[in-house]
Length: 365
Image (cartoon, rainbow, N blue to C red; front, side, top):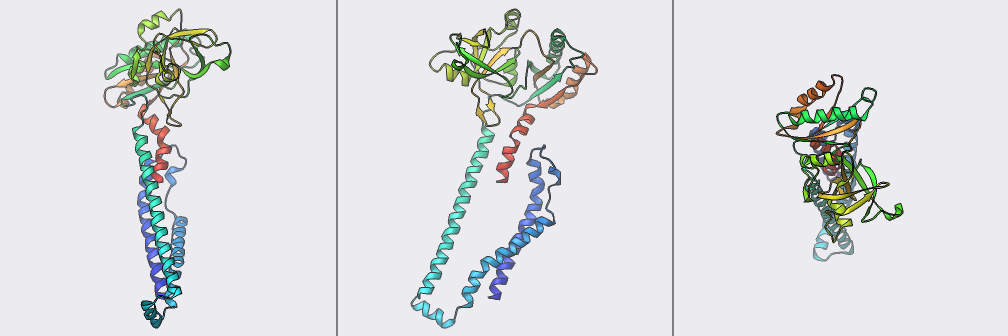
């Protein structure tokens, strides 16, 4: 009995020590995969508490799973073994059934774990292949927030951003650039709009809720969004809407599929807000809601209004690595206002921050 228990405890302890060695080497790799904003991430380590818990669990496991065979061998007599070899006793059959049951249980648990791991790997691969609705590669986002005390008038804000956009487009290595009112790659964050199709809704309950976004010309091209039907906004639209804003509308595929399932949405009239309406000029790909990785209920795009706001974003499509343009872009901002700052971030890094927790959870599992 003592020999069986000793062997069991030695094997379990060796397995625990091997697991600690693997864990110590894997911690740095897992920390590198983890989102950077998790608090106290750099303090993650294998300390004495983890060591004591692992060794205690290994000893308990060795004792627990060594007791049954030890008790079995303690009662074995040579004569009984010879007798059971000729004709099994009821006690022998009981032990055999117990052993068979343990083997079946181990195989069943292993199969469940194997299937769970396969499903997690499948989910992780699907996360990498999800259609975002745009192409984030080589796209940089510059957010500028003007001080309202220094730029109190909308005309001043518009003049600043128009000149900044013009200078950015003229930079070497910049393929295209476009203004947007809010964070450019997110489906959320836009204003809620209640729309009706074909005629104004008498009551809000008869209208549909969608997300409203305001963007400038070249926005969809810069973001790499697919144009499925019609056209996108142009500089000519900017001139047209200088006096009558909101007449040209672009909708996404989700909105078109929901509200125009059997009709061509191009040329259809959409009523929104209190007394505004516009004509659908184009249909673009649907952005994902990154909190659920699912398409949103629909996005209604309008041109930027003739007046701007103190905080705007510029999406910039570059040739090569986007952050190589960071210093030149900051210089363009300081050339217009030496005290003005800006925030620069690539779309790929934004996606990493948003999808990082889900990715890290799957890797841990």
